Length: 382
Image: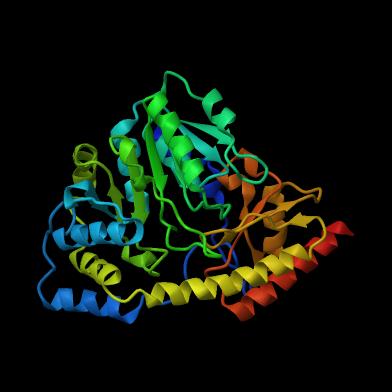
């Protein structure tokens, strides 16, 4: 048996890597952060046409020029932001975008501040490339704790990383919060890395404020995004980075060494996603809102469980008062045929929480799963 590297060994110890992979028969899946919708037909058709038209060879390593233009169009349509294709790097999903940032800007011992709780892939990526994740706890309502962030900044700090809307909490940061973090980044000469993969999935008429809208920090702002969630394209593996062209050129070195280029037909499909009708996004969002109402209603009826809010994405991150560790709660629910995610997978501040995803589970199964969840909690209470 060969010895694996230290960097991979660090990943094997994370809670994210230790989740059970087998799915019990009849279990209700509320653990999976993936749409259950098929990719809209006009997007599929564009990929087929691209193959027929010969887009099956090596492509531009920065990304298909037509797609990079379309991404700029999308940013202007959604946020009024003016970008050029030179400010865009197309990646193999959002995960590669995360790795491109950490690989490019972190050396051994460098620190990245990550909000807690937060998407666990950030910490894994920081560790993979030799950095040290430093966790800054959020307040109990998942609002920013600015003092906690400032207290954790050191001479080794290189960046602040967070998702907005947040996976796992569903919290959407408002304009003031995003600007407060941007001010910290400027004051301490840090990069600010914002994953906006759920930016099209917000509820109750909330306006989403993008980091790209703060013109004065464009020299240090890196926005990550992907087509996976908004357009039900998780398997197509197309993400992208938006940043000043000078930063894109720096990250391009790692990207090209790792992947050379991205699938041509998949990129043409993404052009159709942006340029084509957007009613598919609205229809999916409306269905998520329906499922969100069901989950929130059930959670509010469980004694000892506080649903908290879900402003965006497709997650709830409830707090519970039952006398059981979060990781044990997930195992307990697994045995009851309900799959959820442990709160501590997303940071130590997640103890006493669990994550429910409502994108992958149709309404009838969601009703059944939430009823099982409620019954299981009632048994714990007894």
